[in-house]
Length: 343
Image (tube, rainbow, N blue to C red; front, side, top):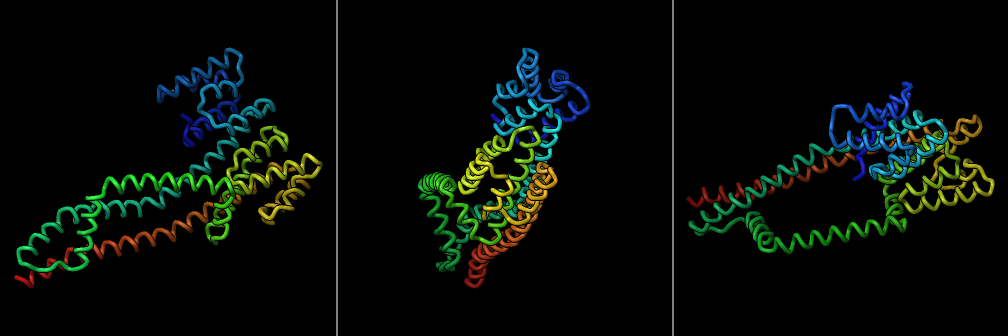
């Protein structure tokens, strides 16, 4: 089972600090293997230490655990060969920190609306299952007719109870259909074409891809890989088929003698700001630094746009919840009022 982002961040931080302070790999993993914490992790670090002592490289030792993603292993491998392992680990630490911050922002912004929705759902089940049947019995005693809204909720509850198994099966089938449709549309590039036509989502999606291109290329080049090797790895990481084609085309042009800047200039996917940062990097021989800056800029833009989107979604969810609660309350209060009149 692969390590989670939080675990990768902690691992890169600890190892980067120890290597940067002058400790060698074996001593660093000895410390990691004997630290207080989960026994399972300590055992993994002990196995890595044994492999290092037997003569394997860090990349080979990490790969044997089957816990680390291919991108991470490729960067570590390049960092080992170029002698810049500590620097590469620091870059990876920043990369995983950005991912954690974005995930935290999304969780924080969706926590309240989801809590409200779950609470309302539980309340609705209790009311429909226990309260409304009691009111129905009272109405039957007084030979009254239930209000339309109350009958609607009761009929819906009866329908769900009667066809619960069918509903669950259909929900599972629908989930599979949606999942495989998503994969198909993503591979064909149809999903990104659709997203890019929706104003807020298009900016969000473009920022997500550009932040990956900038930050990943910066990390790979800093690790010591040449440009074509870095682009080949990047092409394997990017999922979107349109951007995959763009990266493949870039690799082809560079292999024929073109520069990264000239190749990117021909692509409609690359905005002017990204292009001018690359141009500055080429003219000042600071390409890795400018790519990192581009990645940081579009990551910040992605974070801001995500917050904006969630700010739109939160009041919408609350509004829909309020409407549902109002209807449910009316379904309970209306028959109670009519019973009072009948008495």
